[in-house]
Amino acid sequence: MASPLVTLNDGRLMPQLGLGVYKVNQDIAVQLVQTAIEIGYRRVDTAALYDNEAEVGAAIRKSGLDREEIFVTSKIWNDRHGYREAKEAIQESVNRLNIGYVDMMLIHWPCPKQDKFVETWHAFEEVLETGLVKSIGVSNFHQHHLEKLLAASNVVPAINQVELHPQLAQNSLRHFNKQHNIKTEAWAPLGRAKFLENPLLVEIAQSLGKSVAQVIIRWHLQLQNLVIPKSSNPDRLAENFDVFDFELSQHQMGIIATLNTETRIATNPDDMN
Picture 1 (tube, helix red, strand yellow):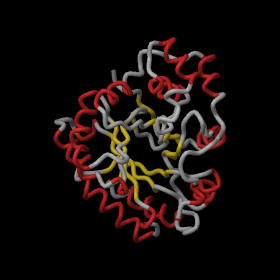
Picture 2 (picture 1 turned 180 degrees about the horizontal axis):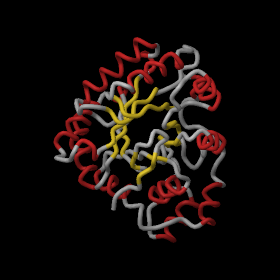
Picture 3 (picture 1 turned 45 degrees about the horizontal axis):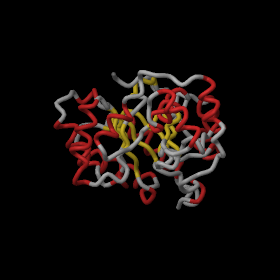
Picture 4 (picture 1 turned 90 degrees about the vertical axis):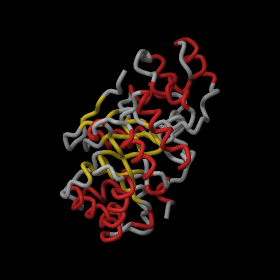
């Protein structure tokens, strides 16, 4: 079964469920992405930081699918903020991927201490007009970062990709994003395996005959989050994609909501240089 498609604010369609390849080593990245495509994944999320853009591109070229069938996201790193630097970084990512264009390019972190993300965004807006990048968005932006960006730009980010899992539901930010027609995307959607033995989640999973990971991914989908679980294990890849044949009840969604303490596992974006 294919992932549902989500319509972005620029009219483009994006699969709701995709594959994240953070910390996927170059030596296994090509085979892993090929396996994911065979399973049914049609979206891959990489970044300059991950050092596997070339491998992701190679896997897509080897897939035999039309380029338009696979949605690829990449991101520029924190040392490439600024108008000229961002333009160069985007071109470098496009070159490394070598698949003609990138579907979605993100600013990886706002790096507010540098205070260049608005200038960086202006470079993104210009590159959007060239066709090298089809959609643009941001990652790890708090509401106050978005407010500053929106006040000084012409293009509203298509997505805001943030740390989001049962312990950090980002309810306020998701509401703000929705108000501005920005899709919320979850990275570390499984909380880096932190919740896989949580008794409440285990009970829900057992009642449905599913794994805890599948329950969490389903929770994301029903919250209308875009979601990019990552695994280097082919069986886990298949399991993470097998989430379209069941639904969580409102009661079960409510139980998962009780796990939210708005607590991060990773760095607060305000503290990232």
